[in-house]
Length: 383
Ligand code: THG
Image 1 (cartoon, helix red, strand yellow):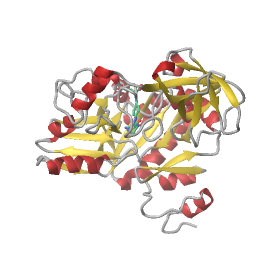
Image 2 (cartoon, helix red, strand yellow; image 1 turned 135 degrees about the horizontal axis):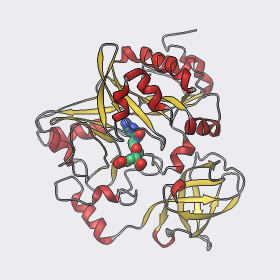
Image 3 (spheres, protein in one colour; image 1 turned 180 degrees about the vertical axis):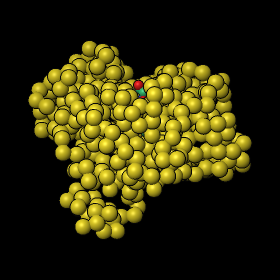
Image 4 (cartoon, helix red, strand yellow; image 1 turned 60 degrees about the horizontal axis):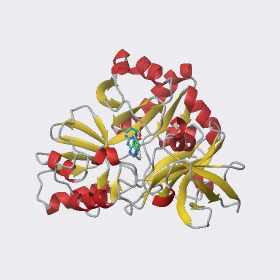
């Protein structure tokens, strides 16, 4: 029965009590129809976590076909106005001086202690209009606080935008069958405008996976169902399936997740974002703290760890990582069995004395098994 919660009561066995605070997306109804078997919540909004297939089946499917992902929880924080560029720049060590319109930047945001606020994708829509496509923290409030405090002439709001990702090697063919040949010209981390149902829509070549793919920043909640159905129909020729960010693909690719691999407690150098911190000529919050960190060095940084034995239980609580002499030197915050590498893999902040590639470590998994592990560089699949 479809209730005011649009059938979400079917999800009651997930243990998640649905309420208005946990926002639905324009695709939620279609996601349920497609057989979603669990959700998580990101930015106060539903994110499908699994469908009928296992993570491993989904992983192989994603590596060969195309999938449709409801990633509306990648909320946009829109900053518009005469001081928009100044405010955006103030929030990150990455310089946007040469950023062209139509480009996406991976954009670490830090606080006054150089602690990570978020790691959004930044889109430049015009000289004074930007979107921050945020991970799971309340960037809107941080930005509004700064704007009020500094008397900036900007408007900051969450626009009526609901990203839908099309991921996997067959995505280009699927997308060009709907949006035309022009989509093939889109380069990685660039966006352009495409027509849908008489509206202009932004599509970027990007996505939270290491496969080729696109993100449609759908404008208009009311168009969601139509967009899903259009892609689903055309996708039948390309073996489309419903999906979601795939944990195996993400960990293999070394894509970090805010709140899991890193938090406000971590600085961007620990997160491996050094490349975005090498031109510090502009003014930004946390500059003094970051310069000090760069001068003094860091105590830990994000690394890959391979560890042996049977496929690991799921990583809902971090797995402690020990040195041979039983010092805890890290915590695996995301881990899973990789069917491609045929070993368990995990992401961990690792203490300085132990972070060299090839370092032997011990990983304790929740089944109480001590597993032999080795530290390696990220991403896994290229090391
Ligand atoms: N897409 C969009 N918004 C997002 C995400 C996304 N917001 C939340 C979250 N994901 C932010 N985190 C990431 C992490 C990695 C990447 C994108 C967003 C990513 N990184 C590439 C890589 O590491 O290979 C490229 C980075 C670069 O070229 O600078 O794609 O997925 N819209």
